Every structure is written in C-alpha cells, then in structure tokens.
Image (cartoon, rainbow, N blue to C red; front, side):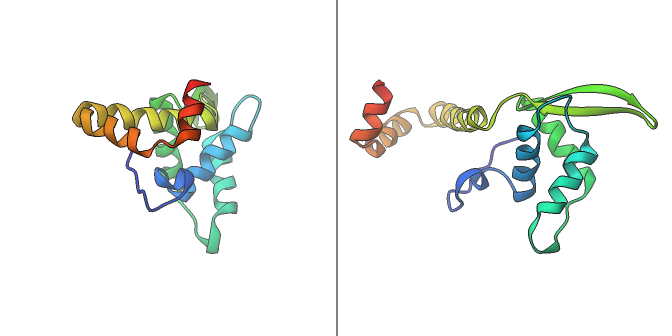
Length: 134
C-alpha cells in the first residue's frame, strides 16, 4: 500500500482513513489467536461515526495490504466455507508510526537528499536535537 500523506490531517489520519485506523486499532488491542475479517468488520462498523459503514471487502483488502507490508501478520485456517485468515499484530502502533516516518524519509532522501536534510535541520529545535542524542 503506497503511503500518501495529507499534512492537513492529525495523527494517523495523515496516512489512513478512519475505518483503516479503527481496523488496525482493533487488531492491535487484541491478544490471542487473532481476529477474522468478520470480527474486524463488525467492530469497525460499530465505531464509525454518523451511521456510516464500510464494506467487508474494503476491510479484507486493507488487512491483506497491511499483511503485505508487515504491519499485520496472519494465520490461515480451514472453516466451513474453505479457508480464512486470522489477523494479528505484526507491528504495534509505535512501530507502525516509525515505519511510516522511515518510509517517507527514505523516499524524500532518494529524490531530494540535500533539501530533505536542510528541512530536517531547520525544523529541529533544541529539545528535538537533545532527544536525538539521548
């Protein structure tokens, strides 16, 4: 899944839609054997604002793309209809945020190395610089 950043948004909404955030948070909170797409689908639709809903196919496609990126992990199991996946965390929320930042920085360094370094330097304040050295 390509990362698209909307700098006008806050937090994870910079890179994910609301239903995607809900889906990841549901999987991140769950400890155990993992969740099926139905489990995630039902939890997400309960939490969406304004009576909105998202299709199960959208949930499945998103969960699978997160598996492809290593953000989530899965196990396949047999069920009444054939095979299904049980999704579980591959990364926690903090690791995912680091993954997003690293992906964006690598891309910028590839295409605009000098400007990226200059922008990082000009945007770091004394507290941020101290954290870099800790």
